[in-house]
Length: 573
Image (cartoon, rainbow, N blue to C red):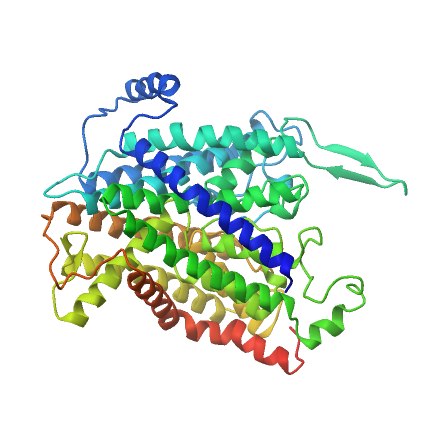
């Protein structure tokens, strides 16, 4: 651990903090129909979209109608992407003449990008054509990101409104999020990346001839545009197999910093939007503080672990790293180093992004446990665009409920009484995630020819690879410990793992939003637990950690914790 590493963390944190308020204000204006500086240009486009699609922008939806629209759009767009993959050989913009994607892999990939997961059981540059990347996958990056944001806003509206049977209009929210937030930001972002050296073209791959006489194929294509929404929408799927470790996706220190910042910038801004929309700015900052505390703890743990490798690892790698400072450099880009690799890994798994600039599989057991634990907490540490906020608000409801039990009063949250239905929806949300992760992992561990038999490592590390895969899928993250041998069983199981983790968990969120919107507002009383204080932030952090520990600690004990103890005794896996 070095002063330079901590300085990088401090600079990132300061820049993130500076962006929270302006981004939050802009998000609130867009999603509540206020005026923005883009109105003269985009209002006519917005109205045209409504006319062409037959949308009545003035009509609002109940939570059931909102949920049906979310599920309907996602189902149709998933079929659309599946069809493009299956037909890509016959479609244009395929200069490499790549074959049609197989049925099970096409299902897995369509489910992955529909759910904002971007899990990739394939090598992108040798599997997906330019048309598939742009029309099938990149469009999903916009839609899935927008869906996450609007579901979070619907929940915040449910908290804000009183005696209301509606929580907004999904089609209006989706259009405004895409048109006013994601598209303009990604255009600017892509131009910045092109300026850093990221390719943006439709050329065929380049055949380079080496000095030894060999031929090397150098991939390229519309990388910058894909990279922009990949990071800003917390999608994570790389244009190249090496993802953000590839110099065409992440060529410079500035692009690396920009990519990390872009993962957090919208999720962090949503906390300020929460405070503005509910009329309690202090509550927004309290939620931000809880998220930031968990983020800091994760980075400190990962950075410490990667800076202090085990003696067995030092002995195996001391020749290769003789000129480098002490630390675990396996699986890391030397140009980013240990600090930036640990920071990137913490950020990408705090959010449901999944982009990587180093291999999590090559981290030390405790260093690798940080990304895994981040996802197991529900990716509520800023989290994915939208998904992080509504996931954390589930824990807010549970925290308020626990606080109410402590004083023997009906829990209240920003003027709304938290009753049995609200707690049931919050618990259903947390139990669905736990159930699918642990059940899928148990099944694949017990089927050796399907699960553990396809891993590249034995012992607890092999178990961690399986556990990480289903945790990442259910959490819609998309990063991996790798080492898995993809087959039909993995493709299908991971597809359903991702779909359940996204959409079955959204329904309780929208049901909670609808129920809260119907309630009347009650004035605070002496027994009301304030949700804008440091004490509330501490309670919220405690609830997140306790729920995560109670549900997943036994599984972690069989994986990274056991591997850590065995490595200390000199046993490698």
